Length: 469
Image: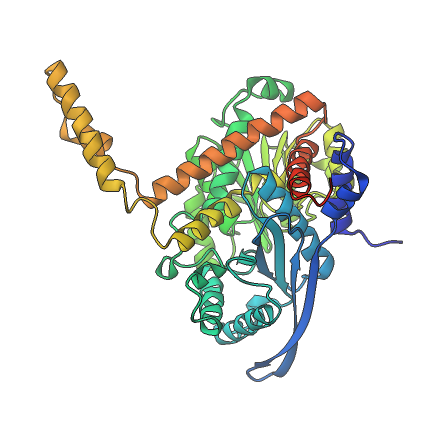
């Protein structure tokens, strides 16, 4: 029996989307394939364990735009098929939300929990050196970012290693995004993917016509939500959904889950997990030993924010959610998706919903190339201009605003304000563009509409270059 291929599943969506376009078959084939696949091995010395051979990957899917962009994950399950699939998804994701990058992805086949910080730093720096050797990292060619198992710390090590090899490159700090603020990262990047998930779900549930078909009222207020994964994405998505009026009733982690139909305090659960290493045994919540079962409990919105292939043909028939928001990459297998769609479940696809991370990474890259923080040049000017307008209104009306009201209206935007505004604009505009395609082309679901949207933009980029006249 042939093993399921994640990359082939992604390609199958492109094939389905291509039926709604008139592009040449050869162009569609070029778009589907990965342009460059780099696999390499290197040794690492582990204290008390001797030398180990570590396998690394970097895949560049599409060069229709440069640089290519995509995260680096540390996981013992990393393999070529997975990295190729995730790189392809990045191409379509960037095109979908009008971020001018091609797609890429990287991975190191390790379980990060088994290594000391010192060894992880050695692995990260050696991985970076291997990428530098083959020009698989640079601000102009290939810009990595955090993914599962990595974060700002690893990005700092990568940036420092690259700068050491290329000390005369003025834009070297732009070789990677998701960096700490001390190394010219950007405010709002850490929570960007989760915030983008919130914006996407908020827009989806605001359309009364679509909610009526699901038997739901418009808006997030009172919607019961189950979140799988309380890592960076899941935590921030749950936090913002709760602040937006949703009720988080279930949280699943790799080592157990909890359920409380009256609602969980996301911040308290997160702090509990930091202390105890698990969400289990939280206050009055019910423990779910096999956390994957939590996905099958009744709720309005299910948010898989962990790894791929969490909903399969085996458990899909038991899923009771009315909406599934794919915060993770590829959490639903293609055969499971058919089952869910036949049940009338609305799926908000990953290539749209988790695009917040790459969107804000784009902003960070722009900041690094311009060498100036957003808001630095015009914040005070905006405050002065706003103050002059308010003073003019006060003089005209003969009424004065209170100091508290004046402070709220006058203040100029900070870098974080600008980043969040740009992210919200990106997610809102993209959602209605996708929905319009779905209705116009009668694609029957949002995922195929996403691929039609992305495929068309990539195809046009190739044709405008003269590659496919």
